Image (tube, rainbow, N blue to C red; front, side, top):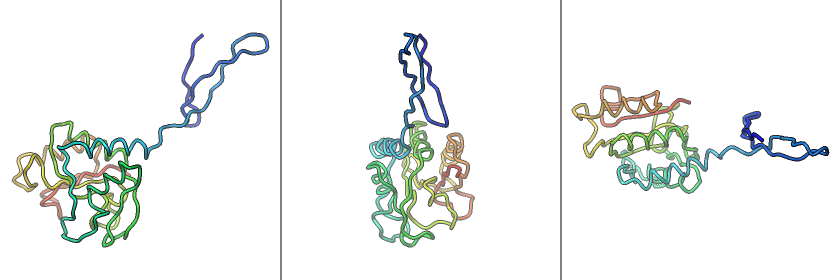
Length: 189
């Protein structure tokens, strides 16, 4: 007897087999829930937190203090199955944001591509009103391979191109207004 996997109305289904009254096999689909996005994000955040090549800043580059909204706190909260916190001085005030799996996976792919980098901001800090940071879709990097990002950094352009290759659709860095000292990688809404 052949067993098949069905997808009905977006639900993954497992095929179950029962014997009918006449002894013939009857198959029906039994719904099985898809993996929870927050559980997947938590597992990815744990990998990021454990990777020594991804340094997560535990302060804000502005010098303002709100420990719950640092890059390190954002990843720690997500790794614990929670949501990341924005900063009180941000355009959205303090709110909880789910870090998207796309962005988190992009961060891991950048590391797998051989880059060591320092993440300064995820959802914390102050950004433009409609920033993808506030949607859990962006991160900023101020150091690549141990060197500060600037227009003279030998790898910042290839880093930006890799972000694009891994799905980022908004990639800014030196040469873009407000991004002379960091690279901004953001995934689509």
